[in-house]
Image (cartoon, rainbow, N blue to C red):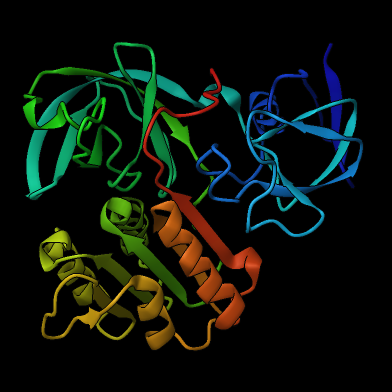
Length: 338
């Protein structure tokens, strides 16, 4: 039996099954709530239940990012009709998500454990997405993996992925052997960690490892449209070789000679000009007041949480201006068919 879910203060409503997450039901109905990981980690989908009750879907329905009256809409299902109060929402066209059979065009090793994989779409086909979104890649066993697009939206006949080699990874372990012409099934776009088009506040990107991928897509898109706002990029790695695309940084420094600041944070070695330590410590040192800023954080769950705590609890960033894209290993959860 389906339950009816309404969004407080609006005429928006949708049906949700008793074993379906509130987030998945909303997306299926063309109502996009904030989200990223869909696994109860990032906290982007946190919102309040103004009326009704929810039950968990095999995991906690709250995490550290939730306010006392909030739950994670990706991790809960309705026990009856609900009235919810999400942090934000807007209508989308469910048919905008497309599946493609892409082919490997180029496979380059950018760091000892990172491949830059460029996929070419079939002739005449284009992928529509926003900078910062991700795709789902289908594996032969039916499972899926998520990777952010590193290319900007105007380069829409290709898809560029940054893949860290995870020992035993169902896809990443295969990446070094992929050759031009190999076919890969993908579906996109997913995710709501995108840039606000009309925002003019100073913006800070804090990324770890291949969390650089969505930041690169956003920054290249900003460069294309000549967006002028103060930008700080803090990129963390254990060693200098983990900062694997320095030419892109040099390009942004030329584009914004006064407005772009790059901080290299190395936790495993000392290097002249680099910050010695983790990205959350680099954020505290270089951005002591974030009260008027916007922050985009991309990386592992632990890194994102430590940056969230530093930014919101210590540096004055309003919680609503912290945008997180959490990179979680393993199968993607809750795919929503187009």
